[in-house]
Structures are given as C-alpha cells and as structure tokens.
Length: 340
Image 1 (cartoon, rainbow, N blue to C red):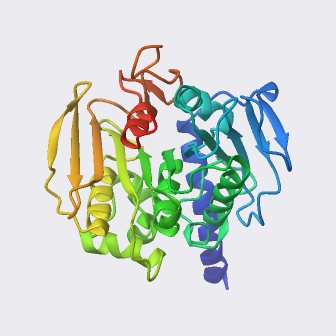
Image 2: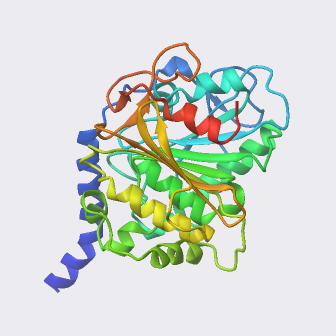
C-alpha cells in the first residue's frame, strides 16, 4: 500500500518540483491592472491588452488575453505568444516586443496566461500527457483561443503563428504537433521538442541533458499527435542560447531532428551564415521551402533575446530573462513569417 501511494504521488510531486524550479529562474514584473480589460462578447476595439472570457469549454482552465491594434482591418495575421514560468501575459507582451510589432506591422496577438491552480509556478504544462494531446487540457484551450480570435477579428486563418519562451516554447511545439492545421509556423525560444518528457521519462532529463531519440523517433512522436494528417506541417524557427544551463542547447538539436524528419528534409543546412554575429542555419524541405531555421545565440543564457531601441530590427525591453543580445527574437520571427 505504501508503495502504491508513493507511486500515485510521484506525478504530483514532479509537477510541483518542476514548477518550483522554474519559478526561481524567471521573475517578470506582474501585470498592471490598468493594462488589462475584460471582454466577453464584443471584439477588441482599443489598443490595450484585454482579457477574453467565454472562448470555449477551456478544459485546460487557462486565461486568454489579446492585443488588437486600433483600426486593424480584417484578414490580418494572428500570433499566439506563450510566456515562460512565473510570467504573465502583460509582462510577456511588452518584454518580447510583440505588441510593438503588432502596431508597426498590423496583426493581432493572443497572449494565453497560465493559472497557479494548474501549475504553482505558472508554467504551461508541456510535460504532462493530459495537456499535450489533441482535444485535451491546455492544448485544447489554446486551440479554442485561436478559433475565438479568428472569429472576433476576422483574421486570416492561413496566417496564424505560435511562439513561446521556455515552458511556453515547449507548448509551442505541442501546438505545432497536436494542431498543425491551425498554424503556418512556430517559433520555439529556449524550449523543448514535442514529447520530450515522455521520451526521456522526466522533464528534468529533457531540460538538463536532452532525450535520446533518433530523428525518426522524434518525428513519429509528432505524427502520432495528429494521426492521419498529411500536411502541410508548420515551419519551425528555434532560438537558443549556447550558455543556457536551464534548458540545454541539445534541445535545439533535438527540435531540428524532429521537425526536419516531419518535413522529410535532411539535416544538412542549406544556409549557414551569421545574423547579428550569431550562427544561423536554414534547412529546406523537398520542395525547396525553408522548413527549419535556427539561431544559436553564442554566450546567451536562458531567456528571450531582445534588442531594445526604435531602429529597424529592434524590439523588446531588457529585464529578468529578457536578454539584450542585440537580436530581437520577435522581429526575426516576424520577418520569417512575412508579418512585416
């Protein structure tokens, strides 16, 4: 009986420990009450961060926020931006620069927010099977947010993108795998491949070492998330610091192996150059289109790359885990996705 009870407690303890660990690592500013406004039925009409309720059955019990620039016309892209542990929608919106780019280029941003009741550290649960499967938990809640946003702003369903930092990066890979038909592309920042915790047997192994899987095994995990799907699969961009000791850079390698396999591409880069002084690679699929892109940010630790300023190519605000490395991830992703 004692062994049975201990076994039952193990997943709960693991969740709490992971949340506590990542809570220590990310400490953004709390959301300002003045910056949040609740919306129930009507679409957004003001350029401020707004909470949206009643967006679906919400099985993952997440909160939905969004930013819609003033006068945004119909048919514009939608970006879903997922915060890291202990972060929130408001802090991630401004820290990354996504809302600034939304005003500049003309698209709307969905900013999901985790609740402490789901995860004590407010991490999206990228490592829990109940939250990473199609039609279940947090993945289903995020998909419902996309549907609500497209309906409210008459967005372009063929131009929906998803990105996130750390645990949010892990959930980005989840959404690309479980709901590939909803996303044209994704951007994983210091995150992990889909099914990593299940492959390694522990989220800690993924974070600190990386799971041992062949490329085809990584790809099979994605294909199993959406049985029978024949494509197209979302393209992937990965940004990861080479000095990241929280989520090891091996996870970028694993993401490349996973998504080149899904796209039927080889693992020899078709482009290998530098951007802002950092190694940059592009892998093309059989049709010649870029399917995987990577930025290895030399010397950068765990966080979101930003480049504060008003110049072309600059965005974001430096702070805890928003790292000023003269390259703004949001800008690079936006350019890869033809947002501006």
